[in-house]
Length: 460
View: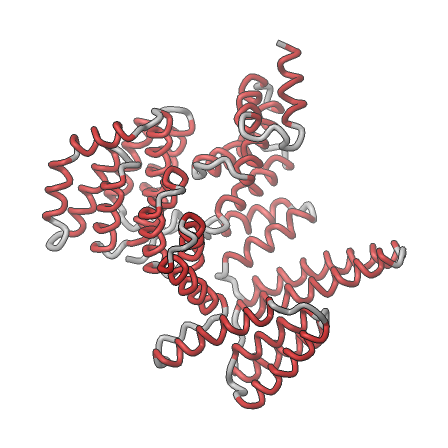
């Protein structure tokens, strides 16, 4: 099922969703959850609403400090709902999914309920629903091998091999001698490499794909094993011979560009990419992004060399040239690929650095539709609104971002810290200290959080 975004849903549904999120942010979770259920009933393809519902459900469940007994009791309470929904799995998967949603209301962290939701979502051809749900529950099951394998399989189903690789890596860490875990990790890594390189031609022969996959892994391993200049030179020579033998093989051409970068032969690396584009007869966003990264690394090398020579004037000039390049490149990429939300995010960031806050806001508002960039786009939206003096709007963006993160990682620390700063600026010191305490309780060394908390206690 094709996903529908917030911008695509009818106005009434969008307004209902925004009211629901506002209610949750104000602490009226029950009312907000009911409205989110209405949104999902009106537009099942609006996956962001389902994800927001799940985040809120899991937060409530975690606040109650669940135990194994909690899940046993919920299994008993949900037994008949589960059995009824299982009976509908083949004939009416949408009804089965609706039953799974009722089980999530009962206990969104119950492993049996999560497994059934995954089955129902796949049967209804919306595996993304299961991926979102398990992603939110993952911190609770961080060391559960069965859970990690289930999530990894779902990542493969929705063509997100990077997520599968991450899950299988966690399994391999938990079971270092498990040969199946090691094999799964290698396969997921290979699929991720193929996707990143744009090697997903569905018309190609299976054996050719398998050859490509194994070849890419071998080339990557060879590149990682480089120890000195002689090793790089020998591998470069080998790749050139490979290219002469198989001029249409993109694996060899990309590997050659990577080796040139390792040798800091940036012009040669860029030439290798140009040759790859000519050989393929086309370019793509991935090659464009790689080209941009190489050019940025060339600037970094020049800056480092100037600083090592004590030539601060040249270093400053190169830093300015790099900043200008990144800005111009971001503009060009958006013009060339206007629907690529990653490029939209990068352009928004460049506008933000230049103090062009209205232009940055426009790009971040588009970029937040990219699930991988949504949280950071909301964060920078908040910073832009804050710089414009629109503190209440800035705070709303941070609330949205925080509500979608269950784990207090570095990103959430940045968001919660900024919420504290804004609350302070809006004359709400007690609320600000509450946000600062959230960070202080998990990371006393974060920024100036210790000083802020100590100062607050001295005032009280």
